[in-house]
Image 1 (cartoon, one colour):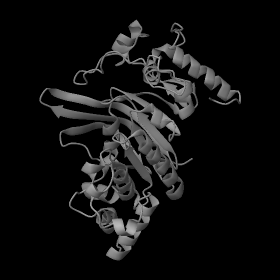
Image 2 (cartoon, helix red, strand yellow; image 1 turned 90 degrees about the horizontal axis):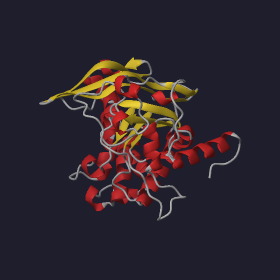
Image 3 (cartoon, one colour; image 1 turned 90 degrees about the vertical axis):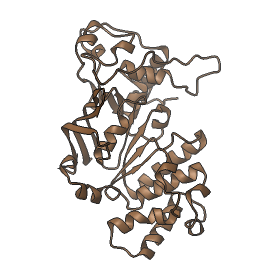
Image 4 (cartoon, helix red, strand yellow; image 1 turned 180 degrees about the horizontal axis):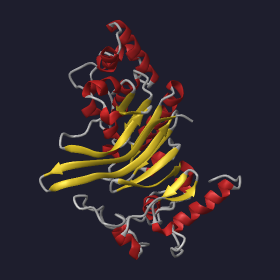
Length: 350
């Protein structure tokens, strides 16, 4: 499988009146052709900053002191603004989480969908508008020819999100970054948008980076999952490995707080105690240690490196060290382990 994007040792800082915020602290990941990589974590963990770095859409007070973002071997961090303008929206496109702030309220949606074609390609206005109509039909806007003259406020929230997706895919980008595209939508519409993204991926062959804090959404779309906390990845693996064989206590906490089909009205959903660390002064050891009931003395002193669980699954926790004591995860996680064993032995995960 071809690796089309490779992010290496990415660091992103922000200068503030109170000092330098170390928002991203050495992130490594890659994206393969045709796959969906989900990046999950609490709000403020650094998910959006990581993907915005790819397109150089960071605030003016940002700085990237270290790292590479290799797109087909070319470092995007070395590109000029003009060179990046040719890549944004054409080769790599982004769907933002709030369609009302992504759409121009004064412009008909047909023109907004056609605009990337006019910017990136030498096509006539008629050709661009014909393609816009085709893409609007592709994303499920009813009667697109007539509705191209309508304005954003004339559409429902779910339809506006479909229009934003249409703008992102009109150039058939190689990489599509979806930054929490279902956050503001109800559960039914969320499912429709997820199904739409999967359908579009099959039709246009794009690779997707999907950003979310909702692990329930991830299960329906991702091939691989990277779990992020305090500006670092703490675990990554296939979607089955993360859901049914999680190894990091933070991943346990995220999953333990998520309802499942087996959850009843009487069941108590747990939450992760405490709050993320202040990245003006990142902790010396494991950033999750103060919130981790399984933390050991070494967690306070030294950041854990990634331990290999399988050839596709890694977790940065001292609990995987050979000398670490054996611990009992939450009951819900133990049940997931049992399902994972059934999956590996050829059974079904129910």
